[in-house]
Length: 372
Figure 1: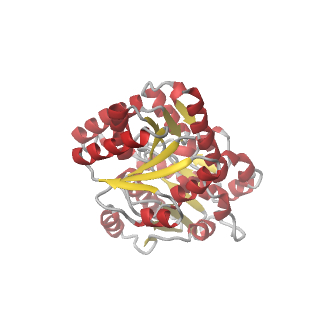
Figure 2: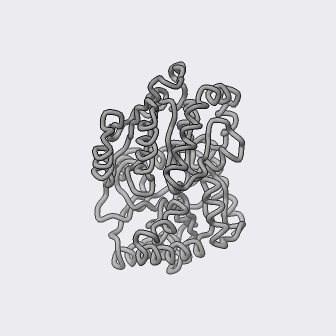
Figure 3: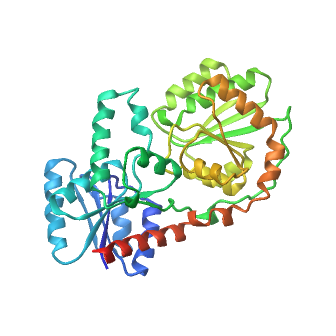
């Protein structure tokens, strides 16, 4: 069996990657991990304690690339290797490693598909450079794991061969997300609990979520809007709320680990993101039965394709249009919750379950090896 080298660009703990490794090893797939970092970190220590031997790191830049190429060449003399790149920067390095060593290279969790096209409007030169790098690693990859319809559609637009794309969802721990309390009825005139959850970065469009909620409050809706997450846009967003005069109704709670409880207490999830490679919060909300009002991104498109009543994808592009659609969505909350009861998400989305998805990844690597 091949050696799968997870390539990452961080050093903190990551339960999603750490949980994969025992499943890989149980199925006879050797594991290793390399981080693009100046030092080892918490994830290295945790994996070392769990018995993983092949661990390392290399400095970003040309010197570090030369070092890791030397390591890969030595390892390749004894066993078949696959670089399994987790992210945009690891995919760039993975493509370069393949260029210099011929090592197999598979893209896992990569850049949100429409992030760079949207970045063109903000930082043109930087986006252009990274779009060229993206094209380079798509060309070099042996396989590209797609988490959602948005990724599928984007790769098709980029003329990536269909045979190179394999559809395996991210993999979610279903047991962590479920309804833990009965719904409270939401009727017009009662306080409506709206929540947005995610990193506070420009591509999540939390500013537009705030603007839409402000419009509804000004129109007479009684809304309590909670924003969960941290990120570089926090101060700007807080200033936006203060300027709107709605600080009484819009709250920032920072990082929270009790997402299941938060979703259970919400009447709807407001998800405004430009793009998602997957959008895990959408699936988590679906398992709590929380109605979802979302942009056309990530796994939201998969849910729409299944005609899942738990989600509504808004079509408007301007704040006034989005506000109008959100108003209608809120008015129909009671009937929407009743419709959600008709679909069992565990059955409908079984292929998104963590163990199932990871076993599909293992099958992907095994089938690739047999082709060689």
